[in-house]
Amino acid sequence: MTAPLLGDLMPWSVAPLRLGRGWISAPDAASLTARWDTLIRATGAEREALFRPTRSRTPRSAVAALPGQPTGTGRFAREAGRCPPPVRIGHGPFDERYLIPDHRLIDAARPELWRVADEYQLFAVEQGFVPGAAGPALLVGALLPDGRSPAGRPGRIRPLFRRPGGAEPNLTPGLAPLLSARLGHGITPRGLLDWAVAVARPSARGCVVPLTADPDLWATGAELGALLTGVQLRGAHGGERPRLPGGRRPYVRAAPPGWPTTIRYDSEDETLHLGDGRISPVPAGAWDFQVGGVRMIETWFERRAGRPEPGTLEAIGPRLWPREWTSELLELITVLALLAGLRPRQRELGRALDEGPQIGAEELRAAGALPVPGWARRPASVLDHHEEGPDGQFALL
Image 1: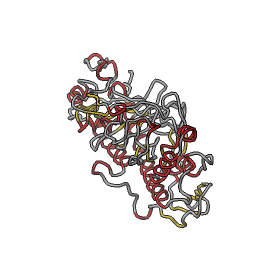
Image 2 (image 1 turned 90 degrees about the horizontal axis):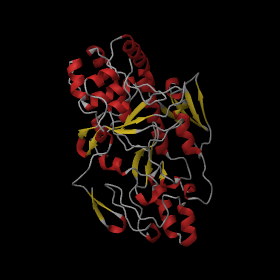
Image 3 (image 1 turned 90 degrees about the vertical axis):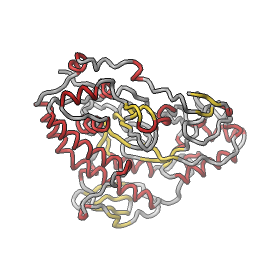
Image 4 (image 1 turned 60 degrees about the vertical axis):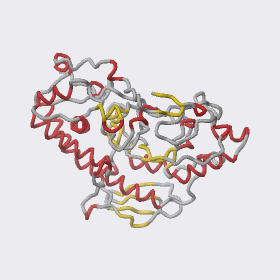
């Protein structure tokens, strides 16, 4: 029996963002404002060099505004205003950072994602496939994600809803009624996503989502998936911020002085060392947590500890390690520790799924749910949505 792909269940997907220049994104918002101001003060060839032109974007590119963002649409070469308020985005698995939401600066911003990014939306992000590598195949978040993959070929971004306001689920037509009748449960879009988060498996052909035909197993998997999703959402959508039991919560035992450049983990006393700084207890499951075979805590640290080339806009940043970054690291440790603690239940669910009855792609085809109609793989039209086009023109989408 062939298990369906996530693309058979959530057909509309978007490629990862392609920023084109590193200086428009940073772990803190203040750095982005300072970089913008430096660029605006520059003129002529200096501004051109700092901008870092590509084939997709130069200071003279004519570009429409990003949906929902109050940014200019005149040629950037003539820009003299203030930096647009940076927005928080998901940066690869389990990281977050700020982005200047100006379409004139982003090579491929994927406007169709910005149109549906609101307080109702969830984004499922397939992870790059690395044969034999440890880590989840599917992650979920409430922030608009850039889709960056730490290893392997980047996957796809699949919004849960095709329209703003939580309207029109991004599910294959007829799938939810079919599963509801087959399992005796009212299958909701969120419930299906929770199931996928719990059971998704990586493969060279894409993210595979086996479907059980056992109603009790479905309930068990959806419940587990809701826990996994809730941890990853970090309090978004009215949920609770992730917390470990009191005796296991990580604390800063010694704040990182200056600018730490090294990171190491002591498994004996469960201590994470950032230079001369110390955080403990850090469960081994959090330190060892990988996506695509890459340790998440090490990756998070390396993205911040490295010093960019002097004279570039990327080099404009904090002089000392910000206290806020340490707070973010504590939350990351908590998230990874909680997810690692749920892995035994995921493995048990996977074994029960393999041993029990399944609903394969063949049954979905026989019932008319597959193949997916072409329109379901394309973004929905937003007929009542005005957006500013290049140089102040307006377009009706």
